[in-house]
Length: 47
Figure 1 (tube, one colour):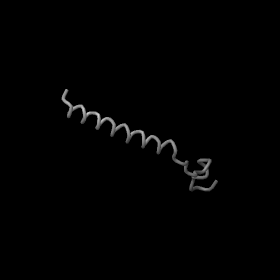
Figure 2: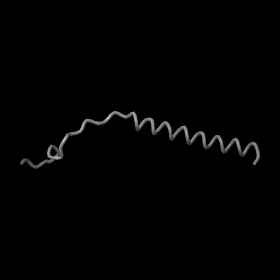
Figure 3: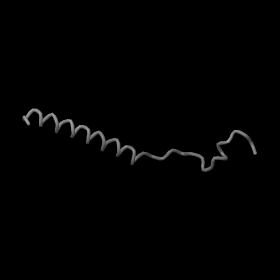
Figure 4: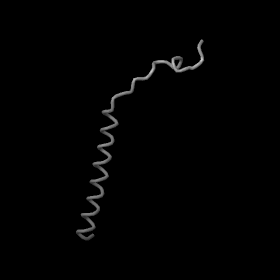
């Protein structure tokens, strides 16, 4: 394997790894949305 091929492969793998870790970090640290506690509160029909 030539030096340029090794450099290109490492650059691609490092780029994909960094982007993946960044997106996982965003998902794991996202604040939960405020949602109703029950499905009954989401119904349009009164009981």
